[in-house]
Image 1 (cartoon, one colour):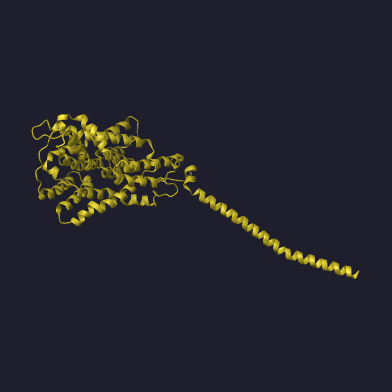
Image 2: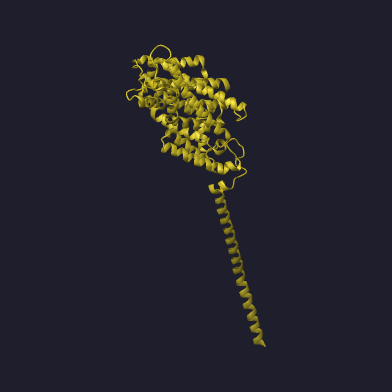
Length: 439
């Protein structure tokens, strides 16, 4: 009996010890299991959060809280298919610039800016994104177009215009497309096809001058919401000068008119070239001060060039400065190619009105040359009238090319530069008039 009791006590002690030893092990196992469960949940949430931050998720699951640069909630279409369409459009612009050579210096930065502006989640074109900062830095205050005008002025030679001043009439006539398109845009609004304000119609009409910086300048002042469409239309039509202009030029001229040979240009003295920019600026100040930001910058660049004593500044304006600003200008304009700003019915009307404006401007210059030939004096080849638009020097080259198709010895390039540079001044004056009237 004593032995049995001892064995029972030993068994109880062993069981108690085993139970006491196994309890911490069970608690430790439970704790480890819970930690593994928590880690698994944390990892799942992390993966889910990452997937929700991807562009694929943003394209397929539009957010109800995403807003545009104006603080308005973006529609589902603009967050998904709209962005995809705009990205494909930028690829098309890349193709035009690289494959076809259409104004690659500006079309490539604009297109790439448009590509960046349509990337979801990143907010690159937003107020604090780097494209938004670029826009505020140089486009919202019109600084970039003005610097571009300085560089263009430094590259411009007013000699052809001064040697044959009457060609300035051709540059003035080509601006008819601007005011004609303004009337057309207002008429479309009255008929109920569009809903353009006078400010928006004015900004659209300047496309007829085929002057990119001027178009950007006036759009920034009068219709910043249309900046992307206006800039793309303006530079696209500038790039397509060799395609758009020749059929119009041939349709409005006879074979004999295309073969007219113009007289040799007279020599223009250095003093004349120095006085001219100061004289033009003085007239602008007295008659149309609103145009002086562009004209003043243009004449400043030209004055530095003709002075002959600041070659370093002249070289900087013609090369490094204008190249740097061109990059920023293109990216800043591209920031306005967001889907919600570009994929609207008004954009199609802007593109249509733009090409009408450009075509009318081309035709007006040619017709003015034909009218001038009705009066006594040296005859003007009507082909140079098309160079009255501001696409310097491409429009002058097109006039020369078309003329040489009919007479290989008929060099019109220098003659066409007269109305071409007059067109630059004319478009700046037209912009000043529109700003004075409608701002």
